[in-house]
Length: 565
Image (cartoon, rainbow, N blue to C red; front, side, top):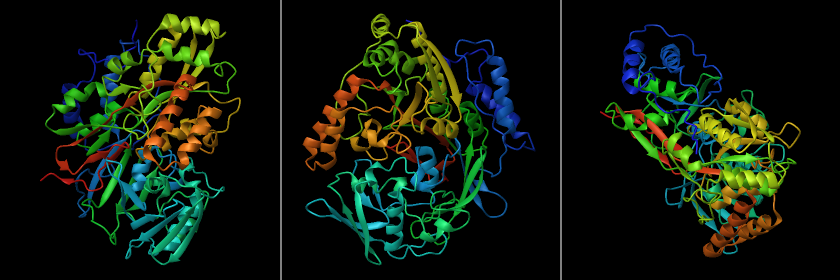
């Protein structure tokens, strides 16, 4: 078998941590910084090794030329302290209702709060709703709201604000990609200033959990028509959170500032600055140079070295995110189940996990992560190129040409993994054209109605914002085909629809769990994806700061970060 290894370290010329220590010294001597202008990520060819020295030089240049608008984790000289985080993607939208990815939701969470929260064990707790009660028939949810809370614009948080937000995320006029759990809402009523009654069309076991998702973050009703916002284009969120919307420069950075009248525990830092840095190696170099305090998704090839570096703390956090190749179920070629199964047999997922992701993932054995309620071990598509070739021949797909689209910097080794997958598909006789895109452009391409421009295959990740198969199964329902949702394979099966409809209203946990398991078996056999892996979520931060963690829904928890001493 042949394994593509696009990021295997080359000791003699690649920028290792020892080399990067030299970069730190060089960067530290620079008194001026160029304005940040992060270029669009370029497609890498994994077989080429001879450019390693050039890459190392490029890393040095990029690490030293990125603008540093806020001094990280320090006093800026004006009495204000700043915490700086480097992330890989530019926000596609700041609208809580429009969220599609946890990285951007993490930013929005600094400003906008939800009615409930869900802990690591899946238990629902109160946030802006201090109490919540579901009627015996499961059709009425009563929320008792927290008092004395104010939005950033001075508007009081009350029942009317909750009604306004929940009605907005169920409005047909507003694009809500993760809106499926809220379609169960029949009506929302303000009983009094601090009590809201939500009527449901049918019992929904996951509804209280769904109120913890950023999509359902409560915004000031007055802000919907203020500061350039509209109901359908809401880009400057006004919430009740500990931070206020600051400045945003597309492709460069986004900042939030501390809200003086926050109702809860006050965070330490006056400003949090999110640096948009698509290249993982550059994010790492910025951290080691002291230009940022924290990064997510460092180069996974460096994880062991980072873990032994006393200057940083490394978290290899668990995640419920599944990574997969979404196959266009409506494409004439890919509509054949035998062809889709052949693509699964053609790819050695474990070899890619070992050699491209450096072990930072676990191969899927079901269409969801094991951390979700409703998971059951479903099956496997063992690497079998001979079987894949025969199935492609039998289905009439031998020698076919397929296009594969991938983001870069969004998931662990995403572009590199896509190249490796393409290599395996070429090995069984297919022609595969790989294209790479920044994440907002990628989303615009895949989160659109099916058309002649729909790409054959694309690499995507899905992380349910609460630990329940209910949210994972959005990816396999006709009601959530784009643009209504992110079921980007355009897959549908009447048997799956029936099983999920039963699970929607089933209140017995054991029966509900079995329904999800039965649906998983059908989905696995149908193979609307090339099932890949559940990734880990690496977070690295300076040892000079503490109070940083993660959630199992792949979010970093750094709002209450503070100096270690």
